[in-house]
Length: 349
Image (cartoon, rainbow, N blue to C red; front, side, top):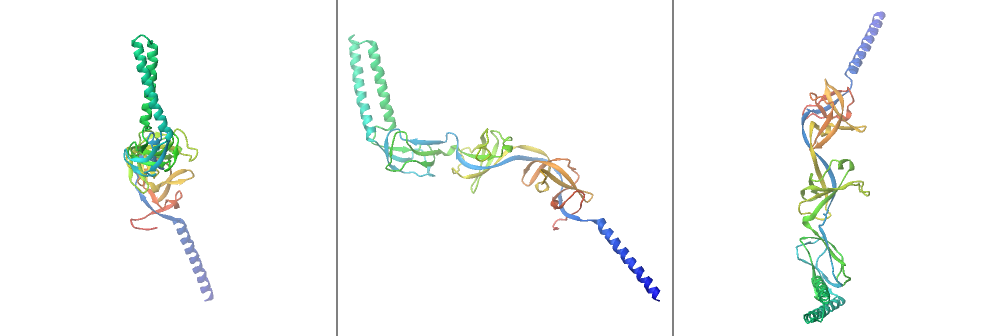
């Protein structure tokens, strides 16, 4: 009886060990697997673009500095920085300096004397008491004096008071003088920027700058404002040492904007055709891009090059099998040959 139970126990132990070993081999055979979602590979085209950031600024020739043509005193300033002005709107009022008025009075007296000399020389010439050379010299002197007096009049030196007006519709970006200031001739009073001459100046990565050229279309999004359409007017030929970027100037075609506003520009650089995959399918790996495809329930690693990305999709180049789906999520957990389970719609990981 004892031998029977002993041998039975041994047989039961061997069966349990064998069963455990079989289960272990089965588990080892199945191995780990990853739950993924996939999408089909398609062919198509995407617009290639470069994104850059910058600010709204005056374009070439858009800014005009208003200055006094003669010595004057500022009596009033009627504009402020950031103010929109129409053409002819008064920005400042000035009083002609006494020395300027004296210079104008002296110019008037010189004109009168020069014209008297010219008339006298003409009379002498008629009586053959003066030469034609003398008469020509008198005429030349009269023309010079009249031109000088005319310039003083155009500058406003003949008036005790004058106004400084906006030369065009635009934005006052600087006021350089205060009421009561005595200004020498040529002193700046204000700067006005033509609204129609505003541009977006954006900094582009030097690697992307090679793809840009004048005339390319751009969509300029004013941060916190409207989206404006424009085109590249100019691309700098050097890297800005302060930013490490290449400046691109985007003309806005007179669209309204605020000087200094921050913008994001998307510049179109052409159409790219090829294999389209969801953007999330391409992962960076050791300086390259990788996608994963599924063949016979296992992960296949494919090295690719991303040619363009837009609206959640990318065009890639590489040894891609168009018949196999690409992994969209769960791809961070994959390694070559690992088993995958494809999730059904609505199934989580």
